[in-house]
Amino acid sequence: MPLVEVCREVRRLGYEGFEIAPFTLADDPAALSTARRSEVRKTMSDEGLEFVGLHWLLAAPPGLQVSSNDAALRTHSWNYVKRLIDLCADLATPGARQTPVVVFGSPKQRSSAPGSSPTEALQFFIEGMAAVAPHAESRRVTLLVEALSPSQTDVITSLAEAVSVVRRIVSPAVETMFDVHNAVDETDPHGVLLERYFRHIRHVHVNEMDGREPGMGDYDFLNLLRKLSEMNYAGWVSLEAFDFSRNPRDIAARAIETLKAAQSAAAQLQTL
Image 1 (tube, rainbow, N blue to C red):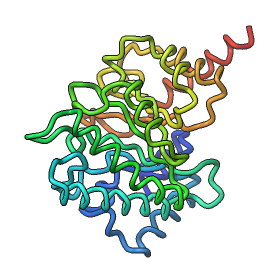
Image 2 (cartoon, rainbow, N blue to C red):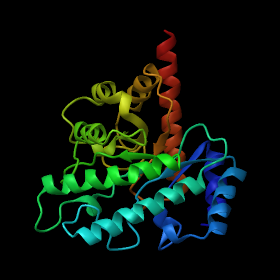
Image 3 (cartoon, one colour):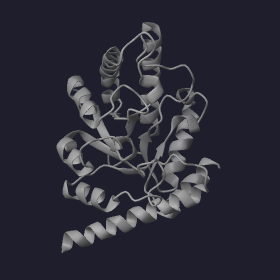
Image 4 (cartoon, helix red, strand yellow):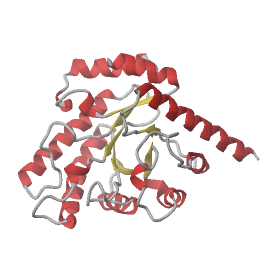
């Protein structure tokens, strides 16, 4: 579906922002021309959508690995991340409510490589993230260290570890985020995690625990949204679904209807 039709449809459904997986734009998204970047930015803005940021960063082009024990490959991969930071900045909506985010998940591209341990891979990740942080700050982009479940990677598998990385880097351009699906193996309740690490949480991904869109499972979005409201969370709540075997309009509609119902119920509880 052309981007303009996607933006028009999601705005009609009630979404206010648009978060992009770069590989959906091009085989080599960092190589997008200035004219194409301007076109994508204008398309979102013309349809009343604010650009939120990027996620699924390193799915394309192939061969990127930021935690490799091959120094040349690490350097190449982190230089590519810098180019994605530029892409994110160039797509930013003029006068946006907040700086756009670059959600660093990319499980395969950050996992330990053969011949290195998870501890070594983590150190490579931290060094690389710290090296690109000044560039992100200069481009007014926020890098988000995303915790992923142990089934996806062996590097940063809990929100506590993600926050530890953020605190080691000490940059205003590096924070973390919360993803419902990726918190499936957390031992503490999600509300507790949000309270404990709230000062570093700049973004939220919503989905069911199995990765489907809200409304296809029994996750308690009411309490999630109520907790975020209680803490005066001002960032985006962004849908990230992984099951695309069904009609995309149905997926997008079911998700926002579920979230709006939960938001309304949470607001009613707060007035009681």
